[in-house]
Image 1 (cartoon, rainbow, N blue to C red):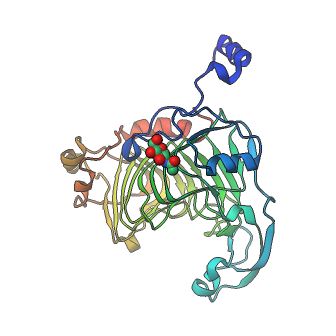
Image 2: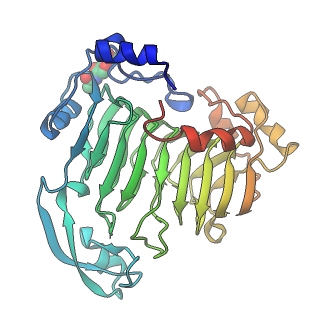
Image 3: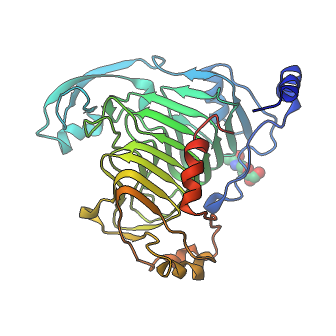
Length: 380
Ligand SMILES: *[C@@H]1O[C@H](CO)[C@@H](O)[C@H](O)[C@H]1NC(C)=O
């Protein structure tokens, strides 16, 4: 609760009375990211202004104070897609993007699809930008964000991205990184996404911190046909350092995350709640350390049928002492409730933490009480 006195000041002097912009600083691998730095804040009022500010070559602090709805702005496409999981209501169907249906789902029934074009490709975000929502007013509907082609030093904080053709696989990704460096995604809520909530593509995304986000997997169209979103977090870059801390991952059925390429993932103090499938896919090249996190009613912690990378799940306090050499402290135990845990003891990748900025870790019990209340937009 804000005292009435402060509310009076805020309403009297508006945003000028307060420091406007990014709150706090990135912890972990993207520590030091500054985004638009001390650039004079800009307040886009139209979709075109938002796109222009994000895509120009000036350092910018871009403050969102309203909803930007991109649905319908680029037309719709109607065509033939496929139904790999059947045509029952509740099942996602797929757009035939890059002949995906033809190449990968040749036996799936063909179905008609009609989707909003704006959702399928995100807004380009160039280097040296901070994109920050004010209170809980910063919402982008129908289009994601795309950080690619060498863009670096970017902060995305306190916004919601929602409604990217959620009924269709390939309907759109909320936040895409591919060939980037120093990106911080913080206090962002993503919901009703067709494809991935956050995707780090096959090129190097380098130093990334993903913190305090709310990955909301509740949906009426699921690849597992059960109301739980399957495509959530996809980390397969060729040289990626990902700090994943304080995130709330709700109601998913798979790929939360899928990790491969050459990715060092430090997953710390996250809260996974309600999964009908698995959390981690540990593909070749994955180097995953999970600690201080909570898995509650979360299905399988690891998809055990396909573990081909490296994972350390901080299994017991004696084994967790091994973290001291490269993290400077013992690792924190995870906590499990009605979840199939996984004992990963691989320490062969700990050396890659050497010399890096490493996020601190609290006990899982602290994450359990704080993360559901603090993750997502509108909480800072
Ligand atoms: C971003 O800011 C840094 C530091 O001021 C500068 O060196 C760099 O050229 C900027 N990048 C772009 C693409 O403007």
